[in-house]
Image 1 (cartoon, rainbow, N blue to C red):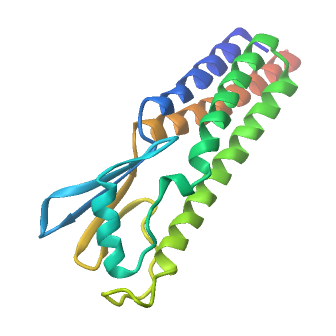
Image 2 (spheres, one colour):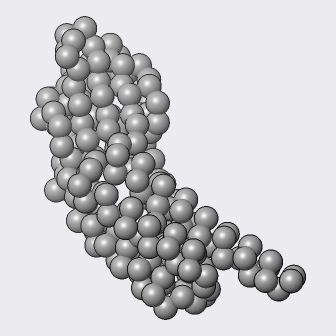
Length: 190
């Protein structure tokens, strides 16, 4: 691999480490009775913010209790991201195109899998409402990205610093592969 490709791979691998210091995703809830708003942040290994208050409010519409200890993803993801960072650094050191292709492919598959899992998690929470809830509501799809109205709340869902860093890392990994393939094509044509 070219020196520039290796450098981009190293930056991509190190950038992903941001998830250990910053949240991946954030939810903000606004309603007249909560003028200061409520927030929930999803980290790589925990869920933070005003989770207890949000769980109490979710109870009224029949949503399941959000229990971080019941989410295996929060135990597995630190290991997965740690492995992917180490694998990226190893790919940069060894410098083989096959290793780069495998690393980028795994990165893309894990990213798509993570988003599908997040969607599935949201779908489950919004569609499996308790029929015994104090407030009856039609099942709904909680927003994965953007703002939506749920009852008398406005809910905003956006990637946070860690999530943006992880997406940028994946894009850099794909750019490194494209750069290496392009430079090899240029060298073969010369």
